Image (tube, rainbow, N blue to C red):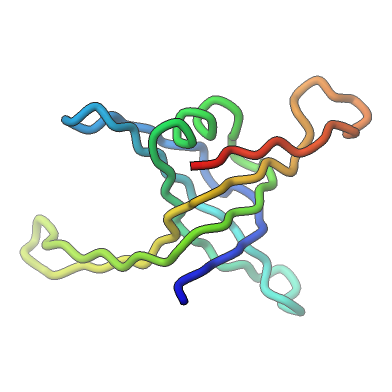
Length: 116
C-alpha cells in the first residue's frame, strides 16, 4: 500500500505553473523533523494538482505548518549534461493547513483542508 502522511513546515514558497492542457500543478519543499533528531530535518518535495494546487498557492508560504496525506512517486529524467537523474516526491491527496491564518492574533483558527 502506497500511503504517506507527513507533518512539517514549508521550507519554500509554493511554486505553481499551468501545463499545456490547462491543468495546474504546484509544488513545495516540506521540512519534516526526525523523531529524536534534535535540529535535523528531512526535506520532501510535495506536488499538488488542480484546485488543491491553486488553494495551496493562495494560502501557503514558507514557514507555514501543514499535514500532507498522499502517495510516493518516483520520477527520472535526463539532465542537460546527459546524466540520468531521479527524485522521490509525495503527490498529495490532501493538504491540511495547521498554521492559523494571517491576522489571527490568538492562533485560535480551525485548520483548513484542501482536498485534491
